[in-house]
Length: 447
Image (cartoon, rainbow, N blue to C red; front, side, top):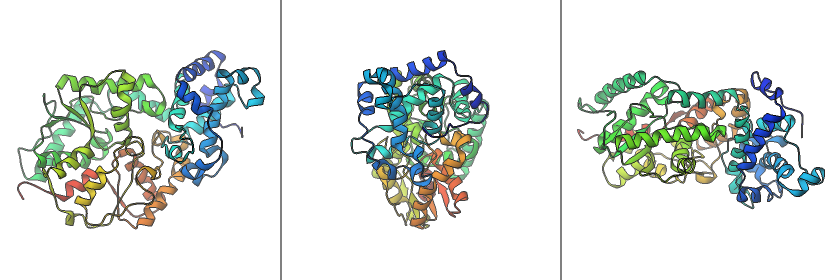
């Protein structure tokens, strides 16, 4: 392994204070999360290096530690040391390594600081190695030792203790919705338009990223405008409206389970038919795919992305769009958790073809699109900010090649990262959500 990484206080203090008991705890969590399939994966990497060109960290930073195969190798060394006969008895022969302070430092630096768990390396791997699942297992061990980078940990803690990842008090949320309702009424020219709260028996329960009421209120107004135009029976919850789940990124499955269960209980409390996830990649992945696994039960309701809903409105002619209202060239960023991991691929494209008059794809796109660099909890880990921005250079170049004026991204993590890249690389673009662009093209009933 290369030079030993050092971290900002207080993470450095925690790593330096590691004892045998804490290391044993982390190791136990790691080994318990490795099932037969994961064990087979860890013994399958042939270190061919084909993953190098798939990773935005590897392409921009360019050092050995940024290679996906190197990251997998760090996990493999520990697995071999404690879970294989040769590793236990002849560790040097098979490249096994003790789970000690030095290895822990390498794990934090590479698995938190050089990986957004985007999964692009997996589709480039000749054997289909599921790198994100292995990284998540290793992050789980670090979380068990309280070694999650502080910014990411505080985001998880706020969600668990306050009900949303920004700690917005319920009264503030309700007052914001009330104010946004007035804005919606003005926008649609109808004083009866509503952003309903706790409407029992509604067809849809719409969830939001707390950053929307705090910093991006136009996103909520856009969704409300679309529901209004479609004549939808929907509601917002008075509490536990947060669709995000940063336990997915930190590796703390206990916290992830707690956060996911709150939305389930809200659905049951209001008797709503479908949980609609706003524009958030990891929020969709956490609630649609991971949630039932964490809770070990089948949901009694549907979970859908707002993109599926809007695309359905267009197909069923429940809303009418005028693409001439969006004339600037638009390109689309594909959030990794929504597209590559989540399977929501064509809906956003269908919407944009009806909502804008000049749409141009990035190259590559869809499942092969590059990560923007903001996923995997990267935006919350300030100690790795410089790497995150550098790694975003691949995405910045993709955007430049399209010569687009508007970049649409159906994910607020991606929106935040793209906004920073816009400034850092002087791209000169606007960054919008799909619903914002759609709402701008809406032909309202009164019209």
